[in-house]
Length: 179
Image (cartoon, rainbow, N blue to C red; front, side):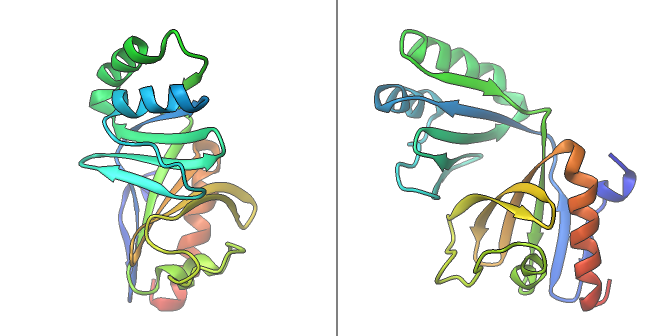
């Protein structure tokens, strides 16, 4: 990735930053495996559609009826993997480390939803897309996972190969506010 993506970019009411390396797993499984993975990961995986759960430095995002994106600091991946192996190895499931496939971006500030609305076909009003909501969607021509982590903060997961495009798109839409 370019040095431009490594910097935090700000405008009046909105900032964009590339998040530090993070561990990411895509987990799929039936209810028994979900419960065991919740115990292994240290937080309950959400069962409600398009919702997230967080605790300390970990998050679980519901992506589908039997699919979750698990986020954790990169330094703890080996222990998560070992704990999961102990608890779910005998249960049907799929757990894939996608840490190197994706990049995390944070768009925050009072105008973050306005900037995102330039490329995301969702209603980002807090009543329609509240804190904790997450979904797969598109931003312009790139598939992303969008998560409203706080009232004025969105976490964006994008495949590494599309990250410069998404970053540039957001940066261009931020120019309206002084960048």
